[in-house]
Amino acid sequence: QVQLVESGGGLVQAGGSLTLSCAASGRTFSSYTMGWFRQAPGKEREFVASITRSGVSTRYADSVKGRFTISRDNAKNMVYLQMNFLEPEDTAIYSCAVFRDDLGKYAYWGQGTQVTVSS
Image 1 (spheres, rainbow, N blue to C red):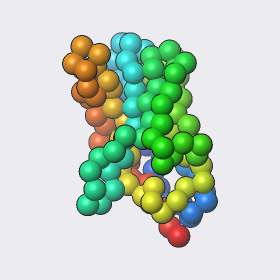
Image 2: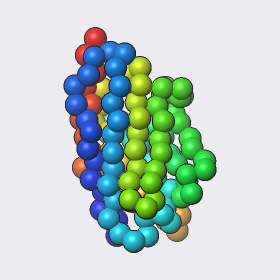
Image 3: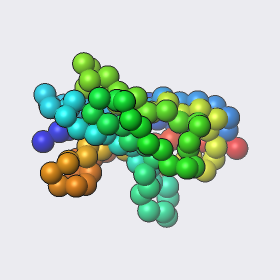
């Protein structure tokens, strides 16, 4: 099992930037595709971005494409989400997750970090 701890959230004005970090435990971190998700108050959790094991391929939700960048450092067991040009609509709890190929789903989740964007 992989344990995940997010950090880097906070309060920022619209147009500003934040970088979220996700620290993963376990020696098999580099074996997993990793993802970022978010959940705003009263809304369902939604996909934000994902990155493959090697970091070569990434995928983004249309709402963040061109503004957010996902990256990883397998040597440090870290995944990052660089968020630029933040909008009030980006306000949510952001969580990282591990995709288990054998299960065909995201199976391990962090506790999340709050991002609040003021207008």
